[in-house]
Image 1 (cartoon, rainbow, N blue to C red):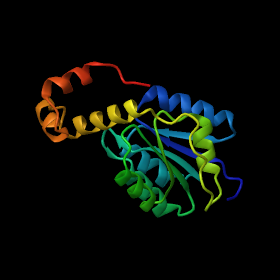
Image 2: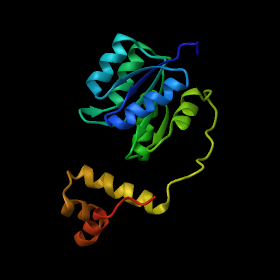
Image 3: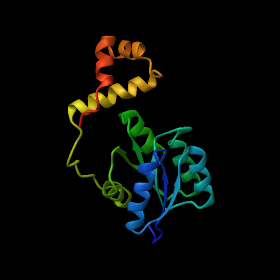
Length: 176
């Protein structure tokens, strides 16, 4: 890739978006930010960036729409998709839409930079601090809970667990 260091960050979590923008500017990128699918698509059309970091789940839709729109105007753009609710199906979809990597939140700026700058065909290094089994379980429960529209009874039925047990799990803080 050329010396073009333009970066689009599409993230609806304002503190994360601003923190990531500052960190990437400190690493030499010219950062543009967006907080929605519509705004991300508009920014991609106005000035197609060489790099992008896109949240999968945004307030107004799916971040993969931004990835698709970006690749329509700049096929060589390197995109990393971030998500707090990762699973294999969405990871595969992200790669099909043109993402070079798929990172679970919380991802730090160094992880994102490494993913953006990785040479095509290189294998990623295993994570130094993988999620614990308790955290993976908690993330899965949260994802199903959201998919069920925050309906505890429906979520418990789909997870094949007692409703009261699920309520106790949801009342606790996320494990590390």
